[in-house]
Amino acid sequence: MPGRGASIHPRRSCFNEAARRSAFKRAWNGEPTVSIDDLVARVLRAYYHYIEKLLLTAKRNCAAVCSFDAVREVTLQGKTELLLIAQDCLEDIGVKRERQLGSRLLVFGTKDSFGRLFGSGTSVVALVDRLIAQKLTRAAEGLVALAEGA
Image 1: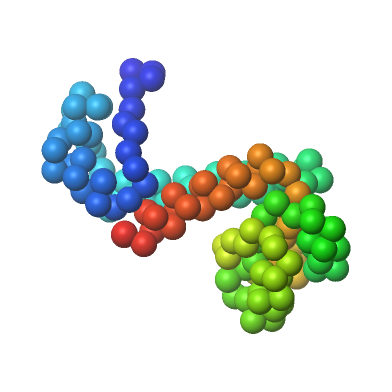
Image 2: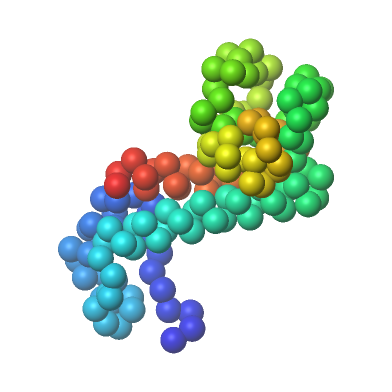
């Protein structure tokens, strides 16, 4: 039925506890047809998809700055709400220096995943829209909380 579902903290322990207490069975009026591992994997994929949608929205709205020089410029001007750095490029771009500039920093994705979204060679993205940055931060926190417990 539309509107039926389950709300759960994005932690593996919460998924396990919900399964132990038969919360999924009650919420969905029947036995779940997927394992907890499969359910966690699906939620992780949903988080990644949502984060990619937020990044594409930022790109479309000119709220994402992608070239390294432009990122440095908006960061120095204090316009950066969130600085995203690809995991496989941390040492290349001097994370310590960027942290000193006072930006909120999120290490996420890879150079390849940034390249798919923003063009090849992208390893750092500055978000200048506060709402998108907040949504992306919350989604990334949920993803990390769930992935670390998996």
